[in-house]
Image (cartoon, rainbow, N blue to C red; front, side):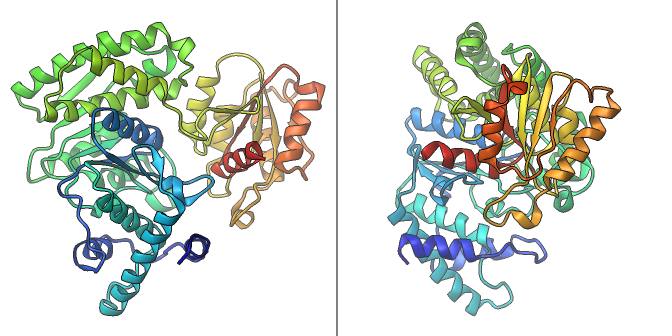
Length: 465
Protein backbone atom coordinates (compact mmCIF):
# COMPACT_ATOMS: atom_id res chain seq x y z
CA UNK A 1 0.00 0.00 0.00
CA UNK A 2 1.10 3.57 -0.60
CA UNK A 3 0.62 6.19 2.12
CA UNK A 4 -2.86 7.30 1.02
CA UNK A 5 -4.10 3.70 0.89
CA UNK A 6 -2.51 3.05 4.28
CA UNK A 7 -4.45 5.92 5.86
CA UNK A 8 -7.65 4.78 4.15
CA UNK A 9 -7.08 1.27 5.49
CA UNK A 10 -6.49 2.49 9.05
CA UNK A 11 -9.48 4.83 8.91
CA UNK A 12 -11.63 1.97 7.68
CA UNK A 13 -10.89 -0.26 10.64
CA UNK A 14 -13.65 -0.16 13.25
CA UNK A 15 -13.15 -0.33 17.02
CA UNK A 16 -13.39 -3.83 18.42
CA UNK A 17 -16.27 -4.66 20.75
CA UNK A 18 -15.18 -8.23 21.40
CA UNK A 19 -14.25 -9.59 24.82
CA UNK A 20 -10.95 -7.95 25.78
CA UNK A 21 -7.79 -10.01 25.95
CA UNK A 22 -4.09 -10.10 25.14
CA UNK A 23 -3.76 -13.59 23.70
CA UNK A 24 -4.04 -12.52 20.05
CA UNK A 25 -1.49 -9.69 20.06
CA UNK A 26 0.85 -11.62 22.37
CA UNK A 27 0.74 -14.65 20.06
CA UNK A 28 1.10 -12.45 16.97
CA UNK A 29 4.22 -10.75 18.33
CA UNK A 30 5.75 -14.13 19.17
CA UNK A 31 4.70 -16.40 16.29
CA UNK A 32 3.55 -14.52 13.20
CA UNK A 33 5.61 -13.69 10.12
CA UNK A 34 5.89 -10.22 11.68
CA UNK A 35 7.27 -11.57 14.95
CA UNK A 36 9.58 -8.98 16.44
CA UNK A 37 11.10 -8.59 19.84
CA UNK A 38 12.14 -5.66 22.01
CA UNK A 39 13.72 -8.04 24.54
CA UNK A 40 17.15 -6.43 24.17
CA UNK A 41 15.72 -2.91 24.21
CA UNK A 42 15.21 -0.91 27.43
CA UNK A 43 11.43 -0.48 27.43
CA UNK A 44 9.21 1.72 29.59
CA UNK A 45 5.42 1.39 29.66
CA UNK A 46 3.46 4.48 30.78
CA UNK A 47 -0.16 4.21 31.91
CA UNK A 48 -2.56 6.35 33.93
CA UNK A 49 -5.61 8.56 33.46
CA UNK A 50 -3.97 11.92 32.66
CA UNK A 51 -0.42 12.96 31.88
CA UNK A 52 0.59 9.80 30.01
CA UNK A 53 1.55 11.62 26.82
CA UNK A 54 3.64 14.33 28.48
CA UNK A 55 5.39 11.82 30.75
CA UNK A 56 6.09 9.56 27.77
CA UNK A 57 7.46 12.50 25.77
CA UNK A 58 9.77 13.65 28.58
CA UNK A 59 11.09 10.18 29.28
CA UNK A 60 11.75 9.57 25.58
CA UNK A 61 13.62 12.88 25.31
CA UNK A 62 15.68 12.14 28.42
CA UNK A 63 16.65 8.74 27.03
CA UNK A 64 17.57 10.25 23.68
CA UNK A 65 19.73 12.95 25.26
CA UNK A 66 21.38 10.31 27.46
CA UNK A 67 22.65 8.46 24.39
CA UNK A 68 19.89 5.94 23.63
CA UNK A 69 18.43 5.75 20.16
CA UNK A 70 14.82 5.94 21.36
CA UNK A 71 11.46 4.88 19.98
CA UNK A 72 8.22 6.45 21.18
CA UNK A 73 4.68 5.13 20.74
CA UNK A 74 1.83 7.46 21.76
CA UNK A 75 -1.83 8.23 21.19
CA UNK A 76 -4.08 9.77 20.24
CA UNK A 77 -2.72 11.45 17.16
CA UNK A 78 -4.03 14.90 16.29
CA UNK A 79 -3.27 15.53 12.63
CA UNK A 80 -1.62 12.37 11.28
CA UNK A 81 -1.06 8.73 12.24
CA UNK A 82 2.67 9.40 11.87
CA UNK A 83 2.62 11.19 15.24
CA UNK A 84 2.05 7.89 17.03
CA UNK A 85 5.43 6.39 16.06
CA UNK A 86 8.69 8.31 16.43
CA UNK A 87 12.41 7.63 16.68
CA UNK A 88 14.64 10.18 18.41
CA UNK A 89 11.83 12.70 18.43
CA UNK A 90 11.09 12.49 14.70
CA UNK A 91 7.76 11.13 13.53
CA UNK A 92 7.85 8.16 11.19
CA UNK A 93 7.88 9.28 7.55
CA UNK A 94 5.01 8.49 5.18
CA UNK A 95 6.93 5.79 3.31
CA UNK A 96 8.05 3.98 6.46
CA UNK A 97 4.56 4.11 7.96
CA UNK A 98 3.09 2.67 4.77
CA UNK A 99 5.73 -0.07 4.72
CA UNK A 100 5.21 -1.05 8.37
CA UNK A 101 1.41 -1.05 8.24
CA UNK A 102 1.37 -2.93 4.91
CA UNK A 103 3.66 -5.58 6.35
CA UNK A 104 1.61 -5.96 9.51
CA UNK A 105 -1.68 -6.02 7.56
CA UNK A 106 -0.43 -8.85 5.37
CA UNK A 107 0.85 -10.78 8.40
CA UNK A 108 -2.40 -10.13 10.28
CA UNK A 109 -4.52 -11.53 7.46
CA UNK A 110 -2.37 -14.67 7.26
CA UNK A 111 -2.41 -14.95 11.03
CA UNK A 112 -6.20 -14.70 11.05
CA UNK A 113 -6.46 -17.49 8.48
CA UNK A 114 -4.02 -19.69 10.41
CA UNK A 115 -5.55 -18.92 13.80
CA UNK A 116 -9.30 -18.44 13.28
CA UNK A 117 -9.74 -18.85 17.03
CA UNK A 118 -7.85 -15.57 17.49
CA UNK A 119 -8.59 -13.74 14.24
CA UNK A 120 -7.00 -10.69 12.65
CA UNK A 121 -5.54 -7.84 14.64
CA UNK A 122 -7.65 -4.91 15.79
CA UNK A 123 -6.98 -1.28 14.82
CA UNK A 124 -4.84 -0.52 17.87
CA UNK A 125 -3.00 -3.83 17.62
CA UNK A 126 -2.12 -3.04 14.00
CA UNK A 127 -0.63 0.30 15.07
CA UNK A 128 1.33 -1.24 17.94
CA UNK A 129 2.70 -4.08 15.79
CA UNK A 130 3.72 -1.55 13.12
CA UNK A 131 5.52 0.50 15.78
CA UNK A 132 7.39 -2.53 17.12
CA UNK A 133 8.38 -3.56 13.59
CA UNK A 134 9.64 -0.05 12.85
CA UNK A 135 11.62 0.16 16.10
CA UNK A 136 13.30 -3.18 15.40
CA UNK A 137 14.23 -2.12 11.87
CA UNK A 138 15.60 1.17 13.20
CA UNK A 139 17.69 -0.72 15.80
CA UNK A 140 16.57 1.45 18.68
CA UNK A 141 18.12 0.93 22.11
CA UNK A 142 15.18 2.23 24.18
CA UNK A 143 11.41 2.49 23.73
CA UNK A 144 8.70 4.32 25.66
CA UNK A 145 5.18 2.96 25.13
CA UNK A 146 2.09 4.94 26.11
CA UNK A 147 -0.85 2.77 27.13
CA UNK A 148 -3.87 3.27 24.90
CA UNK A 149 -6.71 2.55 27.33
CA UNK A 150 -6.71 1.04 30.81
CA UNK A 151 -3.78 -1.32 31.07
CA UNK A 152 -4.80 -4.87 31.93
CA UNK A 153 -6.01 -5.61 28.40
CA UNK A 154 -4.12 -2.89 26.52
CA UNK A 155 -2.02 -4.21 23.64
CA UNK A 156 1.13 -2.50 24.96
CA UNK A 157 0.98 -4.85 27.95
CA UNK A 158 1.61 -7.78 25.60
CA UNK A 159 5.01 -6.40 24.54
CA UNK A 160 7.64 -8.67 26.12
CA UNK A 161 10.68 -7.44 27.99
CA UNK A 162 9.31 -4.30 29.65
CA UNK A 163 11.87 -2.95 32.15
CA UNK A 164 9.95 -0.19 33.95
CA UNK A 165 6.29 0.73 34.40
CA UNK A 166 4.75 4.10 35.25
CA UNK A 167 1.17 4.85 36.37
CA UNK A 168 0.89 8.63 36.34
CA UNK A 169 -2.40 8.82 38.25
CA UNK A 170 -5.85 7.26 38.39
CA UNK A 171 -9.13 9.13 38.11
CA UNK A 172 -12.60 8.91 36.63
CA UNK A 173 -12.56 8.53 32.84
CA UNK A 174 -13.76 5.92 30.34
CA UNK A 175 -16.04 4.61 33.10
CA UNK A 176 -18.20 2.77 30.57
CA UNK A 177 -15.22 0.53 29.83
CA UNK A 178 -12.95 0.60 32.90
CA UNK A 179 -15.50 0.74 35.71
CA UNK A 180 -17.61 3.19 37.61
CA UNK A 181 -15.37 3.67 40.66
CA UNK A 182 -11.81 4.83 41.09
CA UNK A 183 -10.95 1.48 42.69
CA UNK A 184 -12.16 -0.45 39.64
CA UNK A 185 -10.28 1.85 37.27
CA UNK A 186 -7.13 1.50 39.40
CA UNK A 187 -7.35 -2.27 39.06
CA UNK A 188 -7.42 -1.93 35.27
CA UNK A 189 -4.49 0.52 35.27
CA UNK A 190 -2.54 -1.77 37.59
CA UNK A 191 -2.74 -4.48 34.94
CA UNK A 192 0.58 -3.20 33.54
CA UNK A 193 2.43 -4.17 36.75
CA UNK A 194 4.81 -7.10 36.25
CA UNK A 195 6.68 -9.37 38.67
CA UNK A 196 10.02 -7.88 39.70
CA UNK A 197 9.68 -4.86 37.38
CA UNK A 198 9.91 -1.42 39.08
CA UNK A 199 6.84 0.82 39.23
CA UNK A 200 6.70 4.60 39.63
CA UNK A 201 3.36 6.27 40.34
CA UNK A 202 1.75 9.49 41.51
CA UNK A 203 -1.60 7.83 42.29
CA UNK A 204 -3.61 9.15 45.24
CA UNK A 205 -4.52 7.16 48.34
CA UNK A 206 -7.65 5.36 47.12
CA UNK A 207 -6.11 4.30 43.81
CA UNK A 208 -2.75 3.49 45.37
CA UNK A 209 -4.38 1.03 47.77
CA UNK A 210 -5.69 -0.95 44.81
CA UNK A 211 -2.35 -0.72 43.04
CA UNK A 212 -0.54 -2.09 46.08
CA UNK A 213 -2.92 -5.04 46.28
CA UNK A 214 -1.79 -5.98 42.78
CA UNK A 215 1.86 -5.39 43.72
CA UNK A 216 1.58 -7.59 46.80
CA UNK A 217 0.02 -10.41 44.78
CA UNK A 218 3.00 -10.60 42.41
CA UNK A 219 5.22 -13.72 42.65
CA UNK A 220 8.33 -11.49 42.73
CA UNK A 221 8.78 -8.26 44.71
CA UNK A 222 7.95 -5.12 42.72
CA UNK A 223 10.06 -2.07 43.66
CA UNK A 224 7.68 0.91 43.97
CA UNK A 225 8.37 4.64 44.17
CA UNK A 226 5.34 6.79 44.90
CA UNK A 227 5.25 10.58 44.53
CA UNK A 228 3.28 12.01 47.46
CA UNK A 229 3.21 15.80 47.25
CA UNK A 230 1.23 16.12 44.01
CA UNK A 231 -1.21 18.65 45.44
CA UNK A 232 1.59 20.97 46.54
CA UNK A 233 3.29 20.71 43.14
CA UNK A 234 0.08 21.75 41.39
CA UNK A 235 -0.99 24.48 43.81
CA UNK A 236 2.33 26.07 44.70
CA UNK A 237 5.08 25.06 42.30
CA UNK A 238 8.21 22.94 42.11
CA UNK A 239 9.40 21.71 45.49
CA UNK A 240 11.56 18.89 46.93
CA UNK A 241 10.02 15.56 46.03
CA UNK A 242 8.17 13.81 48.84
CA UNK A 243 8.15 10.08 48.13
CA UNK A 244 7.36 6.70 49.63
CA UNK A 245 9.25 3.56 48.63
CA UNK A 246 8.36 -0.11 48.85
CA UNK A 247 10.28 -3.34 48.14
CA UNK A 248 13.55 -1.50 47.55
CA UNK A 249 16.68 -2.87 49.22
CA UNK A 250 18.91 -0.72 51.40
CA UNK A 251 21.68 -0.38 48.82
CA UNK A 252 19.23 0.82 46.18
CA UNK A 253 17.61 3.17 48.72
CA UNK A 254 21.00 4.78 49.33
CA UNK A 255 21.50 5.29 45.59
CA UNK A 256 17.96 6.67 45.27
CA UNK A 257 18.57 9.17 48.10
CA UNK A 258 21.74 10.37 46.38
CA UNK A 259 19.83 10.75 43.11
CA UNK A 260 17.00 12.67 44.80
CA UNK A 261 19.47 15.06 46.45
CA UNK A 262 20.99 15.67 43.03
CA UNK A 263 17.65 16.20 41.28
CA UNK A 264 16.29 18.49 44.00
CA UNK A 265 19.42 20.66 44.14
CA UNK A 266 20.39 20.82 40.48
CA UNK A 267 17.04 20.45 38.70
CA UNK A 268 13.99 21.11 40.89
CA UNK A 269 15.54 24.14 42.62
CA UNK A 270 16.48 25.65 39.26
CA UNK A 271 12.99 25.06 37.88
CA UNK A 272 11.41 26.60 40.99
CA UNK A 273 13.57 29.71 40.59
CA UNK A 274 12.59 30.18 36.95
CA UNK A 275 9.06 28.76 36.98
CA UNK A 276 7.29 31.86 35.71
CA UNK A 277 9.78 32.36 32.91
CA UNK A 278 9.63 28.72 31.86
CA UNK A 279 5.83 28.82 31.62
CA UNK A 280 5.30 25.22 32.73
CA UNK A 281 1.62 24.45 33.34
CA UNK A 282 0.73 23.60 36.93
CA UNK A 283 -0.35 20.06 36.08
CA UNK A 284 2.85 19.44 34.12
CA UNK A 285 4.88 19.81 37.31
CA UNK A 286 3.52 16.48 38.56
CA UNK A 287 4.27 14.83 35.20
CA UNK A 288 7.81 16.22 35.31
CA UNK A 289 8.36 14.98 38.87
CA UNK A 290 7.00 11.53 37.97
CA UNK A 291 9.26 11.27 34.92
CA UNK A 292 12.32 12.36 36.91
CA UNK A 293 11.60 9.71 39.55
CA UNK A 294 11.22 7.08 36.84
CA UNK A 295 14.47 8.18 35.29
CA UNK A 296 16.30 7.07 38.45
CA UNK A 297 16.07 3.50 37.16
CA UNK A 298 17.77 4.51 33.90
CA UNK A 299 20.53 6.43 35.67
CA UNK A 300 21.01 3.58 38.14
CA UNK A 301 21.10 0.98 35.37
CA UNK A 302 23.77 2.86 33.43
CA UNK A 303 25.62 4.14 36.48
CA UNK A 304 25.40 7.60 34.91
CA UNK A 305 27.49 10.22 36.74
CA UNK A 306 25.37 12.69 38.69
CA UNK A 307 27.10 15.79 37.42
CA UNK A 308 26.49 19.12 35.75
CA UNK A 309 26.17 17.52 32.34
CA UNK A 310 23.25 15.32 33.42
CA UNK A 311 21.62 18.25 35.25
CA UNK A 312 21.86 20.39 32.11
CA UNK A 313 20.24 17.63 30.04
CA UNK A 314 17.39 17.26 32.53
CA UNK A 315 16.76 21.00 32.75
CA UNK A 316 16.83 21.41 29.00
CA UNK A 317 14.43 18.50 28.44
CA UNK A 318 11.96 19.83 31.02
CA UNK A 319 12.08 23.40 29.73
CA UNK A 320 11.53 22.21 26.17
CA UNK A 321 8.69 19.90 27.15
CA UNK A 322 5.92 20.79 24.75
CA UNK A 323 3.14 18.38 23.95
CA UNK A 324 0.60 19.34 21.28
CA UNK A 325 -2.79 20.12 22.71
CA UNK A 326 -1.63 20.33 26.30
CA UNK A 327 -1.76 23.95 27.48
CA UNK A 328 -0.56 24.99 24.04
CA UNK A 329 -0.89 28.56 22.77
CA UNK A 330 -2.23 28.80 19.21
CA UNK A 331 -3.05 32.18 17.67
CA UNK A 332 -3.51 33.77 21.07
CA UNK A 333 -5.71 30.96 22.46
CA UNK A 334 -4.76 28.43 25.10
CA UNK A 335 -5.66 25.02 23.69
CA UNK A 336 -5.92 22.01 25.97
CA UNK A 337 -7.29 18.53 25.43
CA UNK A 338 -8.75 18.31 28.95
CA UNK A 339 -11.74 15.99 28.52
CA UNK A 340 -12.42 14.61 32.00
CA UNK A 341 -13.01 16.11 35.42
CA UNK A 342 -9.44 15.82 36.80
CA UNK A 343 -8.05 17.18 33.53
CA UNK A 344 -10.44 20.14 33.72
CA UNK A 345 -9.44 20.75 37.34
CA UNK A 346 -5.76 20.74 36.42
CA UNK A 347 -6.39 23.09 33.49
CA UNK A 348 -8.31 25.56 35.67
CA UNK A 349 -5.51 25.56 38.24
CA UNK A 350 -2.95 26.23 35.53
CA UNK A 351 -4.93 29.18 34.12
CA UNK A 352 -4.53 31.18 37.32
CA UNK A 353 -6.53 34.31 38.08
CA UNK A 354 -8.36 36.65 35.72
CA UNK A 355 -11.32 36.42 33.40
CA UNK A 356 -11.58 33.31 31.22
CA UNK A 357 -13.74 32.58 28.19
CA UNK A 358 -14.03 28.92 27.27
CA UNK A 359 -14.89 27.63 23.82
CA UNK A 360 -16.07 24.19 24.81
CA UNK A 361 -17.30 20.98 23.24
CA UNK A 362 -17.11 17.37 24.34
CA UNK A 363 -18.32 13.86 23.59
CA UNK A 364 -21.58 12.58 25.02
CA UNK A 365 -19.88 9.77 26.96
CA UNK A 366 -17.86 12.25 29.04
CA UNK A 367 -18.70 13.60 32.48
CA UNK A 368 -20.07 16.90 31.18
CA UNK A 369 -21.42 18.06 34.53
CA UNK A 370 -18.21 17.17 36.36
CA UNK A 371 -16.03 18.94 33.79
CA UNK A 372 -18.10 22.13 33.87
CA UNK A 373 -18.17 22.05 37.67
CA UNK A 374 -14.38 22.36 37.58
CA UNK A 375 -14.22 25.03 34.87
CA UNK A 376 -16.99 27.45 35.76
CA UNK A 377 -16.95 30.19 38.36
CA UNK A 378 -17.97 33.85 38.48
CA UNK A 379 -14.88 34.86 36.45
CA UNK A 380 -15.63 32.60 33.50
CA UNK A 381 -17.73 32.69 30.33
CA UNK A 382 -18.72 29.78 28.11
CA UNK A 383 -19.26 29.49 24.36
CA UNK A 384 -20.69 26.04 23.66
CA UNK A 385 -20.52 24.15 20.40
CA UNK A 386 -21.30 20.72 19.04
CA UNK A 387 -18.13 18.91 17.99
CA UNK A 388 -18.04 18.09 14.31
CA UNK A 389 -15.60 16.17 12.20
CA UNK A 390 -14.55 12.59 11.49
CA UNK A 391 -16.75 10.12 13.39
CA UNK A 392 -17.72 12.86 15.84
CA UNK A 393 -21.28 13.98 15.13
CA UNK A 394 -23.00 10.78 16.29
CA UNK A 395 -21.34 10.84 19.72
CA UNK A 396 -20.91 14.54 20.51
CA UNK A 397 -22.73 16.32 23.30
CA UNK A 398 -24.86 19.01 21.63
CA UNK A 399 -24.36 22.70 22.26
CA UNK A 400 -27.90 22.76 23.69
CA UNK A 401 -26.99 20.05 26.23
CA UNK A 402 -23.81 21.90 27.20
CA UNK A 403 -25.62 25.19 27.66
CA UNK A 404 -28.34 23.55 29.75
CA UNK A 405 -25.76 21.90 31.99
CA UNK A 406 -23.76 25.13 32.37
CA UNK A 407 -26.87 27.13 33.25
CA UNK A 408 -27.86 24.56 35.85
CA UNK A 409 -24.43 24.82 37.51
CA UNK A 410 -24.44 28.62 37.33
CA UNK A 411 -27.90 28.82 38.90
CA UNK A 412 -26.90 26.35 41.58
CA UNK A 413 -23.88 28.50 42.44
CA UNK A 414 -25.90 31.73 42.15
CA UNK A 415 -23.53 33.17 39.53
CA UNK A 416 -25.82 33.07 36.49
CA UNK A 417 -26.05 36.87 36.32
CA UNK A 418 -22.26 37.24 36.48
CA UNK A 419 -21.23 35.00 33.59
CA UNK A 420 -22.05 34.79 29.91
CA UNK A 421 -23.22 31.46 28.52
CA UNK A 422 -23.51 31.76 24.77
CA UNK A 423 -26.86 30.53 23.52
CA UNK A 424 -26.24 30.72 19.77
CA UNK A 425 -26.50 27.01 19.24
CA UNK A 426 -25.39 26.89 15.60
CA UNK A 427 -21.75 27.86 16.12
CA UNK A 428 -18.83 25.99 14.62
CA UNK A 429 -15.30 26.51 15.90
CA UNK A 430 -14.46 29.26 13.42
CA UNK A 431 -17.54 31.31 14.27
CA UNK A 432 -17.02 30.69 17.98
CA UNK A 433 -13.48 32.08 17.74
CA UNK A 434 -14.72 35.12 15.81
CA UNK A 435 -17.41 35.73 18.41
CA UNK A 436 -14.97 35.48 21.31
CA UNK A 437 -12.52 37.89 19.67
CA UNK A 438 -14.98 40.50 18.40
CA UNK A 439 -17.70 40.61 21.03
CA UNK A 440 -16.85 43.23 23.65
CA UNK A 441 -18.47 41.09 26.35
CA UNK A 442 -15.42 38.80 26.15
CA UNK A 443 -12.79 41.54 25.87
CA UNK A 444 -9.78 41.17 28.15
CA UNK A 445 -10.40 37.54 29.01
CA UNK A 446 -8.11 34.59 28.40
CA UNK A 447 -9.47 32.55 25.50
CA UNK A 448 -9.35 28.79 26.16
CA UNK A 449 -10.41 26.03 23.77
CA UNK A 450 -10.97 22.74 25.59
CA UNK A 451 -13.18 19.70 26.16
CA UNK A 452 -11.95 17.34 23.44
CA UNK A 453 -8.92 16.50 21.35
CA UNK A 454 -11.22 16.88 18.34
CA UNK A 455 -11.26 20.64 19.07
CA UNK A 456 -7.49 20.60 19.53
CA UNK A 457 -7.14 18.96 16.13
CA UNK A 458 -9.40 21.59 14.57
CA UNK A 459 -7.33 24.38 16.14
CA UNK A 460 -4.08 22.86 14.86
CA UNK A 461 -5.56 22.54 11.37
CA UNK A 462 -6.64 26.19 11.44
CA UNK A 463 -3.17 27.28 12.55
CA UNK A 464 -1.64 25.53 9.55
CA UNK A 465 -3.95 27.28 7.11
